[in-house]
Amino acid sequence: MKSGSNLEKVILSGQPAVTAELGPPMSADPHEVIKKANQLKGFCDAANITDCQTAVVRISSIAAAALALREGLEPVMQMTCRDRNRIAIQADLLGAAALGLKNCLCLAGDHQVFSSAGRLKGHPGAKNVYDVDTCQLVGILKKMRDEGLQEGGDKLEVAPKFFIGASWTPMGDPIDFRPMNLMKKVNAGADFIQTQGIYDIELFRAQMEKIRNMGLHERTAILGGIIVPRSAMMLKYMDSSVAGVTVPKPLIDRLNKAKEAAGDDKKKARELQEAEGLKITIELIHQVLETPGVKGVHIQAIEWESAIEGIVKAAGLYPRPTFTD
Amino acid sequence: MIVGSQKSIDELWEMTKDFKKVLVFGCNTCVAICHAGGEKEAETIATLLRMRAAQEGKAMEVDFTSVMRHCEPEYFEPVLEDLKKYDLILSTACGVGVNFLSDRTGNIPVYPGINTSFYGAVEAPGVFVELCAGCGNCILHLTGGICPIARCSKTLMNGPCGGTNKGKCEISKDVDCAWYLIVERMKKLGTLEKLAEVQPPRNWSTSRDGGPRRVSLEHIRAFEEQEAGKSDPAGGKK
Image (cartoon, rainbow over all chains, first blue to last red; front, side, top):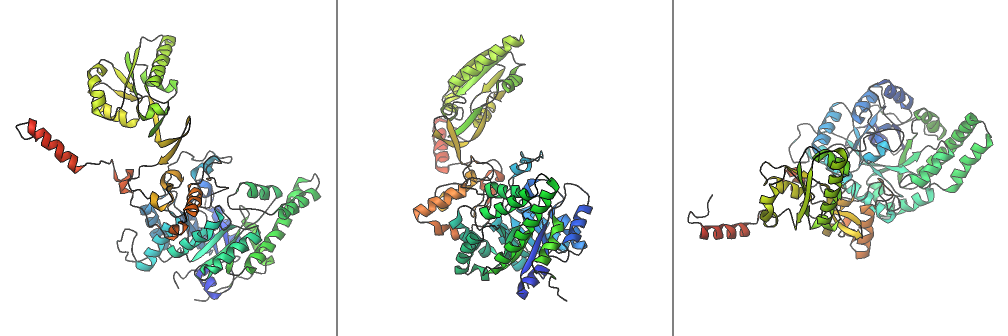
């Protein structure tokens, strides 16, 4: 066992792993994290704690992960390359390990321009760091864990033992490079992979075939990304604007139909779309898990953590495995 | 070349309004090509400042002149004494020129007349693009001649992030994804496999992160010192 994390144990057991996501608040109030942690606890094997997603300042991933851990939810801390150089990254990794965190997902991080793309002012004028990139960050975690060395070569008395994750955008541009992209992350040391949201199952399966031919599915645990759709508008936006995501028209049509069935009743339109969105989610989970080489699912119910319990139960993925040691 | 862009006249006025005798000093190499700070632009800025001074009722004398380059002493040394007749030199050279001149004008301040933008090329008439970041450790042979340090908004070294959308960068639909270009270029060159290797963390000390940089050519220095020694009986030692 590399880290002894619950997520690692589930993956080693051969059962399909389930991870979810918890977005920390733009506030110093811990209760939001505590509330969400309790909504997710028991319904996933670990939950990603996002690291200032879309470059918006929030409770840091490590601090929120420590709060979640106290509630009994195993966190996957996230570490982006955007905000820290290798000194800060390693200092934070040592601190995170000392706090009991065992999973770390390595990410490039959204560019700071995203912080003001919505209704917020954000910090679009911030300086980004990118001292290292994702592959290099994965390599740093592996070197610290397996060799007990800092990136610079200095010894660590006690090495941080992380189960190392990375993201993968299987359907991103340039699509024929994406398998090599994954290979590099695996070669650098990624133990598990969480993918960008999958709606186009055929395209995902075509990419997974290439991954199997490269043998990568045996060297890392690939968890297929599921982003829970809530409305036709959301799916249309994801299709047109979110990098690496294409949504087949029949899925958008289904949510449109649900919306239209409600007539002018806005509340009902929302409820019907959410119900249809949950149905689509369950279908996608099954399709992704049936894809050879996939070891689990990463379910993102964005700002809708309360939906995870129902989804996991309806997908037949409850109860989650437990381990005595 | 070094690409610059003009500052607003309001900003230039705020900088200069308390001086009586101002010289707008153009530079006729890089910043002239990008229409930011050559003699023509220096003349325009001087005219605008004079008009503004008249509008605001300020007595300000504004002249303009230019040299080929602000970054080599041989070009501006002949006019250095003339420059010292002014209370302010508004240099429309790049930041290199402003600094270099500033170190040599004694108690006469040198202010920046333009913004220095980047090292770039002329993509089309009037369009300039950044293509090099001057990182001090060139790896273009590994990336199909396309620089991920200058052209990827995250300076990624091992391939694209998840933000590539239809060949464009996540920061804007108007910005090409450097890694999309690199992959397409290397496919054409038949060298895509080169990208399979994981590039380790970079040593950024050759970049600005190592502090101000200096290149000193030993053979040129030795020759210069020898020449100085010939004309200086003390042996050229200072």
